[in-house]
Length: 352
Image (cartoon, rainbow, N blue to C red; front, top):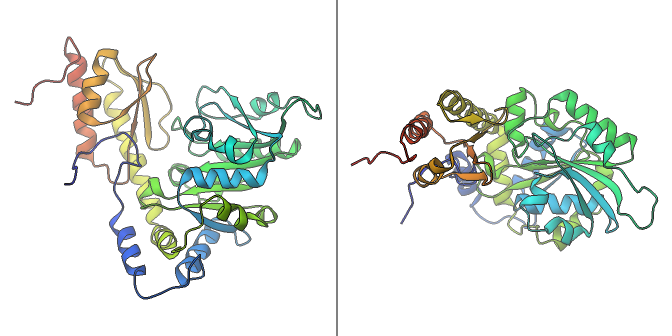
């Protein structure tokens, strides 16, 4: 039995774009060599290179945590450290996998908007050469961030320059890189300019399950095929992962999906911003909206429209728009927010 409920909990909750499903079905014809020695993978790699540079090295994985963990394994050794925002997915939502698989420490830096800055990075570089301290070796940022904000080109340039100045690698968690590129009006590669390695996500952008690790410093990819295999991220029937990237990249479906999700988030923000009792807490630059609501209104709204409370202490919630979010969905949530906040107990009216 299918659950037809629609909501704003995550773009992971959205279905698969029909063109992506069709591409997977089309790849399901005859036999093909395993582990990436197939026409779909060769085509997908060529399309990724078109976005990130012809010298990029491209590897497909099953999921975002796998992409992040395998990428970081190449960059750091067990006595080293990764500087990242305190909100970073590698710190908050990967069950300690980066630490387990790399042995390295995460330096979590508090930020107001999910963004690192050159000053925050420089201030986290301590204990260099001191044998009792984890040695900083990499910086990891997320584009777009877990707070829905987007690094502009000048911000990326400043971070990349700071990393180079201090001999650090730069990793970009690009689970929502497509949304950032759509917001910036640039290519996927330009949206992560200066990175040594990128976790380039597709799942949140309409794929079934497909992520990629893209090395923009090709020398770092020398041993990656062994890291991917040892980490359980090498698909035997690779063509079905690769076909999804072909579908997304060949005719700019990735851009249409991301631009639509961003537009729906912007529409939602515009509708709820003027509701008394609602305060938007972050700049709405990609496909996420963060807002403060009265505590008594959150539970009934979340029950009806399916979204997460981001911070239970403050009453901050997160609404995520997806490639398949409709204007009807957005207007329904906005109307629900208005109704809940006009009710004395924050309870939605009975639809009777």
